[in-house]
Structure formats: C-alpha cells, structure tokens
Length: 489
Ligand SMILES: Cc1cc2nc3c(=O)[nH]c(=O)nc-3n(C[C@H](O)[C@H](O)[C@H](O)COP(=O)(O)OP(=O)(O)OC[C@H]3O[C@@H](n4cnc5c(N)ncnc54)[C@H](O)[C@@H]3O)c2cc1C
Figure 1 (cartoon, rainbow, N blue to C red):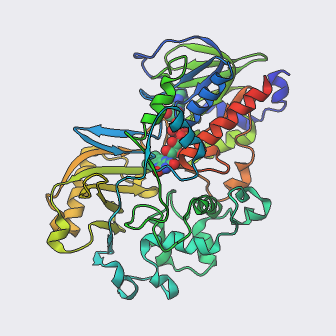
Figure 2 (cartoon, protein in one colour):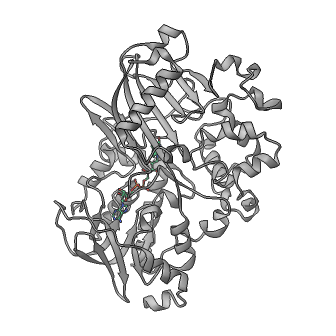
Figure 3 (cartoon, protein in one colour):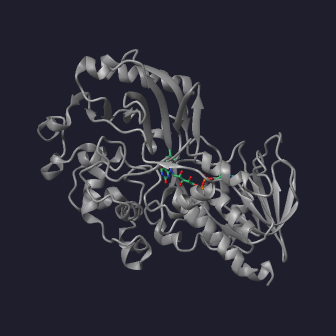
C-alpha cells in the first residue's frame, strides 16, 4: 500500500498546518552518532519512547531513539544541586503501575515507600490567615451551603467526586459520557456551585483553569485515581499530611529509570537532535534532524508531546483529525521553586508549616524528610494558568517575588528559606507543560482518533493515554505503538 493510498484526500487544513509548522533549527553539538538507516526511528526519549524502543529491540528490530534535549527522561527529571536532591517532574509510582514496576525490576532499580511526607496547611485566602478547623465559620469563606464545610484544597475533588459518572477507567470514551465534555466550571454552575467555590477549586486543578478544562478530562483522571486507592475525597489527593493513597518512589531519583532504559539500548540515544520534519514515501520514512542529519526507517514512533509535534513538518500532512488534535493540544503549565528550610518558622508562630493560598504562589508544601523526619524542604508549586503567569519573568526575579510574598503574609518565614532550584515545565520548549488535558469539546472532536497511525508513523506518549495515567500511561502508549508496528511486519 502506498502512502498516497493511506491519505487519499488530504485536506487543505492538513496541508496548511504542515506548511505553517516552522522547523526549529538549533546548532548541533555533541550528539552521539549512530546508524542512518534503521527499522524504527523513535522520536523522544521519555518513558513512552524508551519503552517502545526496548520492546522493538527485544523483537530483533534495529532502533534509533532521537531526543531534542541534552538528556533522556523527559518529564522524569531529578535535580541534584550541592547535595540537595529533589524531583522536578514525576516521582510517585502508583501501586498498580505494573509496567513501571516491571521496568524497575528488569534494570535492578529499587522502589521505596519512604518519600518526603506532606505537613498540615495554613490557609491564606484574600489577605487572611485561617486555620483549617476555622474555615467553615470564617468570614473569608465566601462559599455557600454545604460547600462551606469543604476545605479549599479538597474542594475540586470533593465536588467532582460526587458526580463521577463512571468507575471503569476506559468508560471516559463511551459515547454516553460525552455529555460531560463541557467546561468543568460550566458543569459546576449547572450543579449550583457558587462562583466563590469555583475560584477556590481552580487553584488545585492540574489543567489551565476550570473554565478551560473538559469535565470529562477530570472524571477520567479521577476514575483512574480511584482504582489506585483514592476513595476518600475528604483527603487531599496530593501533598497533604494524610494522603489518599500510598505511593512508591524510585530509589536514587526518578531519572534513574529512563537513564537505565536508555543505557540498555544497542544504539545510544542521539541527544540534542530535535526532529524537524518527516517525509513519508511508499516504502520508507525520512526523519530530518535539526543537526542536518537525515535518518531513514521503515517506521517512526512519534513519542514527543503534541505541544512539540506542532513544530514538526509532515509530508504528507497528518490526517485532519490528528492535525486538529496536534494544533489544539492543551498542556497544564507547572512552575516550582525548591527551598531548604533553615529555621523552623512554624515554632515561632505556632501555625501549620505548609500554606495553601489564593495568591500568585498558590501552594507552599513544607515536607518532612524520609530519612531524618525533620521538616527541611519547601516546594512552592504553581499549576495551570497561574504558572503561565510566572513564565515571562526571569527566574531570579521569580524567586525574589516568592520569598517576598511568603515573608509578607507570614513574617516568621523571613530569612527561613534558602533557594535551591526552580523549574518551569511550561517553558520547556520540547514538553510545554506537565500534562496534556482536553479542553471542553476536545474529547468528542479527536480523543478516539488522534493516536491512530498515520502511514508509517505510530504515536505514543502520555497525551494518548487510555487506561493509565502519569508515568504508567507513557509506558502503556509506548507499548501500544511497539505492538502496532510488530503486527505490521
Ligand atoms: C511536575 C510533574 C509531576 C509529575 N508527577 C507525576 C507523578 O508523581 N507520578 C506519575 O506517574 N507521573 C507524574 N508526572 C507525569 C509523568 O512524568 C509523565 O506522564 C511521563 O513522564 C510522560 O512521559 P512521555 O514519554 O509521554 O513524555 P516526556 O517525558 O515528555 O518525553 C517526551 C520527550 O520527547 C522529546 N521531544 C520533544 N520534541 C522532540 C523533537 N522534535 N525531537 C526529538 N525529541 C523531542 C522531549 O524533549 C522529551 O524528552 C509528572 C509530571 C510532571 C511534569
């Protein structure tokens, strides 16, 4: 079958989309040389790409992974600065992460349940500090009815949990559930939720904003979290002193796993080699790198996030639905600042160590060390549109602002934090955010079709998840792309 047959009616939109995709050219420096002609080129050295690569290699195919950045691991990124080690990306391995756990076992990598533990929150809302126990009766609590009882950091989950329309992790694609493919804020309003509650619930959202996220996208994640043990919506899903479900962590840091997976491949990953274009002909795919090199392959696994796929030129262009999904893909920004706590400021003011706020820094998690039990680390973590608002500032300025704001609202914190490292996933040009989410109407428009093979190109990555989430979904989709190719040869 020729490629012309595969795309019989290329639309104007697909062609225009591919012409608009401006190739990103970077200077070539120090990439590992490798074969120019292989069975499969894999684009992206995150868990999805690496899992596809190892499965295909195990079946005897020749494989070349190409990675745009100077490291493997993608959204698994461990910071190691002057003896300080912390995760900037994925860290929690769920109890049901079969593929991640199996990969750890195969590479002799340990897992531990001893991770940093969260501490209690002080609420800081509209200029007033409130203890969680006083929230329901506080005058700054502008929510109404039974909403008043729900602490702001459980509000989103607490409300959505009651309306979860399905339990099975695959049910989100059932046509019957497409009625929920509307803005989460709109769904909340239709259920009588107050505007004050919607504004507070927005802070913990791992998406742009409740207005801009499909409720179905949230229900999908909630159904998955539920099978993992998130059954009590009165506990915060992440970060609090009492977490909803127990998780494990990769010994040595999350990036140990992708590093080991990459090292086990026969051909070294080509780093600093963004793919800028892919041409398909009847019998092969040509993969153009920003370094100037051109690789040829029988198949391609495109395991880069759609936020980055957007800049790759495809000839012929991707089918309509996929081109739409790539251009319309939405990613939730996340910006973090990590500090060493140099003084127990909570002993000075007698308040809980962590802060949940509706200010620009959103949440400040004071964490207990798994080894010493001391509360010694603070991570300020901003998600969604809130994080995007930080992204146009220089990092030093951001840190100054965070420290000044914390000291202003809580004077005991002045001078109690030493900056270690910060990271913006929204600014990472090859990832563009911490996770993909669907905007209202997008599940209906392209969720079912956006991961289908386009000629010789097979797609993988967490944005194409079906049953899993997080790291496990990257592994799931890498496996699916490898299986699709194996079935064709
Ligand atoms: C802050 C944060 C916290 C998280 N917490 C958790 C958690 O606790 N538990 C959990 O399970 N998951 C968590 N996740 C999610 C998890 O890390 C991701 O779902 C998973 O790592 C995604 O893997 P991936 O292979 O799909 O994509 P990525 O890891 O993003 O890999 C894609 C790769 O493609 C490369 N690329 C892009 N464009 C090109 C190009 N043109 N040419 C070549 N290469 C290209 C990128 O540089 C990148 O290396 C978190 C993520 C973040 C950011």
